[in-house]
Image 1 (cartoon, rainbow, N blue to C red):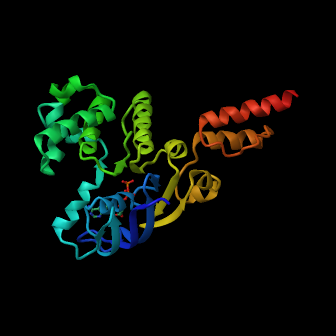
Image 2: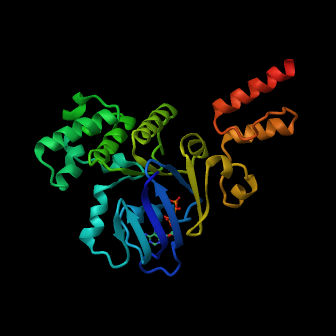
Length: 287
Ligand SMILES: Nc1ncnc2c1ncn2[C@@H]1O[C@H](COP(=O)(O)OP(=O)(O)OP(=O)(O)O)[C@@H](O)[C@H]1O
């Protein structure tokens, strides 16, 4: 049976010097090896939720259980920081946080802080570089002499070097071109296939459709849907109310059907699935 990686119970959070709750009683369980997409319009509470899961914020009330660690409003700072042994957080534009003279030094920052031996750190650097698909020769190079896509991979390698079982990514493909986007998503999918639990905040419904096995939609600090991408995209009216869009594949399928195309599957989630549906419908037409 799948084990839970993250359990959140009735979580509330209000930022200092504000009165409105940013999180207003959120409960959810994320299983190990889930690939969860968190969606919702600006200000709906996505970043607040993932910052609590990463221990960057402490709940005002409610509880979190992360890889067995129990966190609530009374948890001491040293206990809270233990979350970083289990959860890696890739911020938006993570390359902006690169700072060291060489790629290896940058990647080793987290493992050094965890107090690992030099040998373990060197092994972790090599493994992290391999996992993000970068050659080991880059270790001695300056991270600032790399391409944008490579810099982002180095930044992600720095998070992976700490070998987190849970990886949170906030809009990981923001600002990347199509090829770098596809490569990065393939990499995240591979990490997931190899056992890492993925929590990805995104505004890209195509990415949700293609990669996530589960999608959590937020609105005004609450979870308003927790389901599969297929289910979520079956209710376009609900999405519109949340200011979310349908993936292009679903929109095109609906348009074709409204114009007599008779596709069998009206919600093909990916463009490949849509192409298959169109071919099937054309073949049927020719019979
Ligand atoms: N540092 C802060 N201080 C005060 N209020 C904040 C702070 N950060 C967020 N908020 C407020 O908390 C609420 C939730 O914001 P949050 O950043 O979690 O939303 P989000 O869904 O991640 O938005 P986005 O998609 O723009 O990143 C909003 O009302 C926001 O204005």
